[in-house]
Length: 195
Image (cartoon, rainbow, N blue to C red; front, side, top):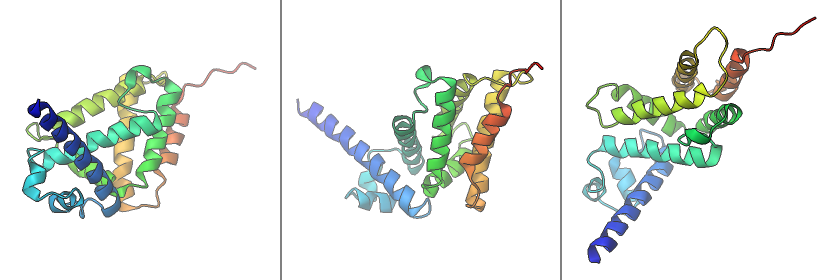
């Protein structure tokens, strides 16, 4: 019985670490989110914190997974693709992008990790591959223009959203959500009108 209690405490502590790491990164930025700072936020040593994660990269990958869970709960978007319809996917995605402007540290973490995770051996590689697939599946439910396949349309939307995050990190006056919303509107299939 002690092992079960110990396991449950370990799971709870891991969740606490992820929640606090989200807060630290969102408020203090990626640069301020050292393992030391996150460990301090949960009352652990750096070694104690890394007992719950294999590496800093794994910790940051799990932080992004936790962020996606929060986004799904608060904004009605990923990872629950099965229940997503086209309007819900569009509105939820735009709300997430609008929220991202309030958490620049998480946007920077996502952007940096996305580049590093291109290498197949990186701890975040599988996360980004799975996330991209799920995102494109959700977008595939959004009606695509006649000239684009649903997969190409979904890839364009993902590329624009990811690229806008990099542009926004360089110029925070960019309204990422408005640009994505306008893109959705511009690319929506139009019904032919008869005169």
